Length: 243
Image (cartoon, rainbow, N blue to C red; front, side, top):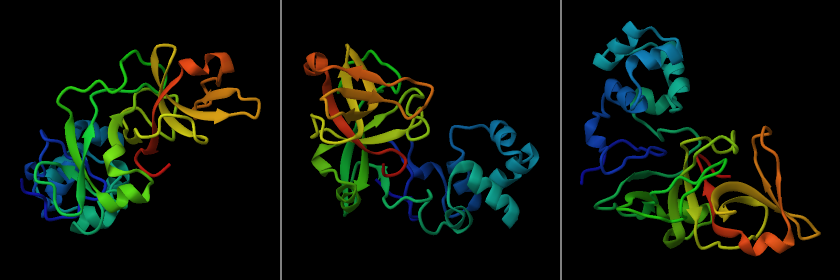
């Protein structure tokens, strides 16, 4: 398995989406990677850049600094990476993760679980896997965010109750070695037969609160008598940035 020459800090590539699909030595290739999954027309409408110019950039034209800044902002990539393939792809990222299969030195494989814990409510079994995708992360970075590589799992958030901290579709690194409440943090849990993604807080009275970062959602209370029914599956350590 060949890996891209450019430093793809912050970019995710799965088995089905190889970096070989993009020529990252060219601006057009990096631009195509940055807007992957989005049509030129959709990107044009979202960014305000004309469709004609978007197509020209994808065909090889190089934008000026003003348009580079607009594209970098609209695609959440760094200007250095977009313009010159230097540094991390994503802003504020201190790690790299790529498709596994011949994991490079300094990286460890992390399985992506085939579940979508809901940021509202879900109805799926925790840790149900079916031929999970495998990603690779820098081992040193995983330890720096506080998770042992052996206990790290990738999951995808669903719903909007944790917005803006964790948004619908965000990838999350979950420490599955944590199976009980330790301190106030965001956990993947099962309660009432539903998979939840919530911030847990314990009051001095022993009352456990399930809190949403989106103020549109009310805080749920879990009384002492019902707490044995709450199953913690892991603590979220990262979702688009350390939390």
